[in-house]
Length: 163
Image 1 (cartoon, rainbow, N blue to C red):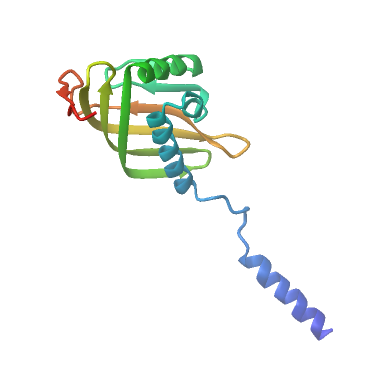
Image 2: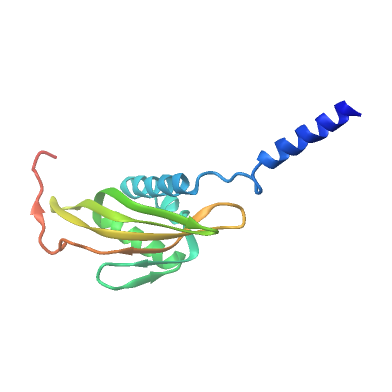
């Protein structure tokens, strides 16, 4: 009888040390990875990769106050940007938090945009807020993305002519 009691006690101790819910991957690390994927897809002008990171009802809030809503509108926005500019962007995240199936990433960015055909560089910096929603299959998708601009894109600087 004693070995059975020890076995039962051992099983109870092990069961008590297990998490109540199955372990989910670290949501903050996932969101950080998604931000990096987004920036890389933007820089490489991979339209489908950019769009795959957005929910079908996602909205992009531009610094000028325009709301770009839905996959088709986002497709058109990216297509216009890709055909007119080259862009490099760097993010400095200050806060990533998740609660249930919602999460957000907030921080600042610095972007360098070069206009095609003019060799004009436009530096832009500001703040961003990206809100994510976890889908039933566990993927995180962008549902809202808002940008501010500390510097105006109306004052371009001549790019170095070493291109």
